[in-house]
Length: 77
Image (cartoon, rainbow, N blue to C red):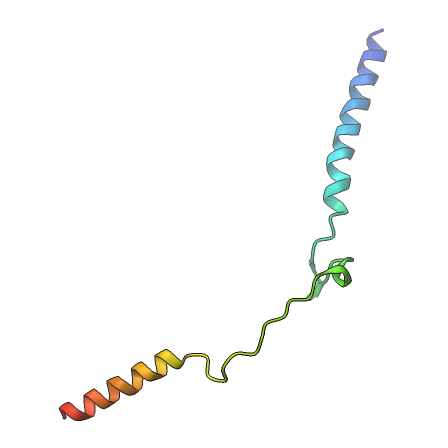
């Protein structure tokens, strides 16, 4: 009876470990191996993101502020 109880406990423990390990190892994460970044096996199922084209210069407000600062500086000197 004791041996059967020990075997049942071992079987339950083994099933719990397998139940935790199998989903973690088959999740399909991006892997970095031997200097290569490999995609997931499901990369072809990813949705494509589209970003519409913006202005050629990414910082128009900053450029305007710099221009204004330079103009103010030259007017003072």
